[in-house]
Length: 315
Ligand SMILES: [Zn+2]
Image (cartoon, rainbow, N blue to C red; front, top):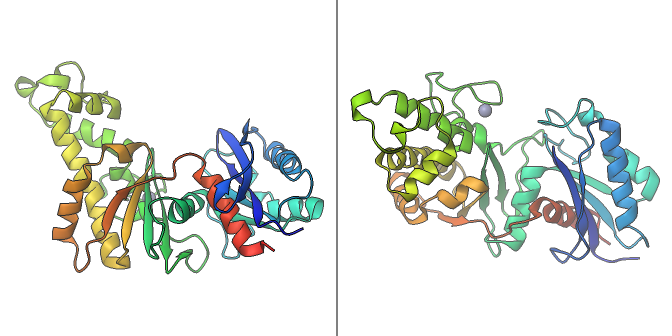
């Protein structure tokens, strides 16, 4: 039966969530389970969820948003999958699901899937060239060019968080190399910047939050709280972080010339949009893309995976 709907599943390190997606929206209950601590357990959870959401063979396909790079034809996970258990990246979800349910299955990197949802249902609607940047613990991204997710030669492209920002080997990145944008523009980078700056302030010059916190112990939360009280140190840290965010946007503008950037994730709400927009227009070579906050908030991974599956396999 042709329905134009697909199941979208988002597999994360702490929970797996899933729903039926039709016309770019969730049209069922959202099922959520805590992620199993074994690879086999996760496979069984995905099979159970699929059975529950496909109860009367009512969907055309299944899309999985997963940590890790996904290969070019969206069939296999290629590499490192963060905090998911050993063996996870070897699960052949596509094969296991298709032999049990006759549901054509597509995999996509979770940041790409969420970016695609923002493009189809959020502030990317009616645009063709959109870059979605997730500013959270790390920096995730999805690049949409001419209406399609840019995936590169292998499938693992568009990792904007790993643009290299410096030649000086100052900060180690989660990817194993040095000075990636993520090491500066993420929430983690924000705290590192705060502690580095605090260490350079003489004892007799300390004021505000620096009277209570020692360098090394300052958190992102401390600085954000300080901003609310116009703490001078907090403002300096925040401006430095926004400058770090800006530098990445300048590079991406000069490479991709997008219509807009959409900033999502927990740190995006602390961006001063008009200021960073003005600075981008001064620094970028040719174009001045809009910088917008994300609109598609919850379950973007589910929605993006579902839309991509329907686009590829919908009847
Ligand atoms: Zn990196």
